Image (tube, rainbow, N blue to C red; front, side, top):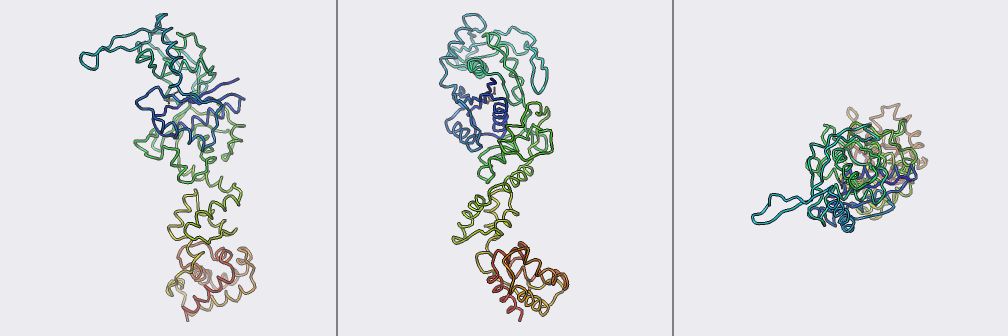
Length: 437
Ligand code: GLU
């Protein structure tokens, strides 16, 4: 059975790249009927914190990436100690006296006795990779017997946890020869490697906190109201190609179609517009009632009595990419005219070359047409459109839309009438007529 692991270091918040690599491990495990271990690599006690660990765990939970087991390296010190002792005993490691950092202090580290050889390993994505380890020297594997460093702890754990496939970011490819040397020294089996391409920005620069700020953190996407499933869908496409035209996947679907053969060698380019598009596609697939609950909850913060009917739900969905766009719409007044009377300015009612007299006539006509109209966008459109086309669309639809919304930009007047209801629409049209009289 394939056993994979994701091994984040809790030295920062959950990063996009970490989440993407976790997803690939998760998908690989699901697809192959394997087992997925999450291993918190917190041996760097100076930089690791519980807050970061919680941020990582909560972020993975929000995304819905479940694992079978959780381990913390800080709880496994005794295991590493026994390996370090063994290595010191058999000569594959030695205590090395270092130049003391502080005057008068003795300083020692544990170094690996590098056999200086050529290492060739097969990578599922990059093919055969060759390294000459001579340049690496006798690298440090522990600060002391009780303080193992990353390479040693990772190799011991991969061995003890019987990891079959190491799926990780390509930035680790240069660590692989060191880790293979340690594996050989402790008699561990070599796992299969898959180094997945890094995520770059549009200028082909690595995504980093320094350059891209909070955009590299998963929390940002949660706060901006992205759907976790849409985020996962997009992450899957960062470095993987399904080999078909399909771009929208649920997590379940991804577990069925994912394969390492579809992972590319070249870097993945992060494109926020694409993520937004994918999020919208997932919003469209949401159960309308679930969607209504979210929209209504947000709108009620400003308009406590708001009810979101089908038409308003449709119009809202047309205008948003993420849920935080609803907050933007609210603050820009894009919901105001549904729930409170708009203020109208006479001049604004008149379309281009039209006149107050003609505008008034058109609105009166519309009012008549609406007398026995049903509250349905398409029906309203088919009742009003022939007249608008006959006398000039702008001459009729502009004042109608403005009378209903008091805004120069708003959804089409047919939807507005359906949302407001015939009576309220008639009242607003009447007010506009009075203004023109
Ligand atoms: N703790 C390492 C990191 O966060 C893990 C690398 C690995 O997967 O081996 O970069």
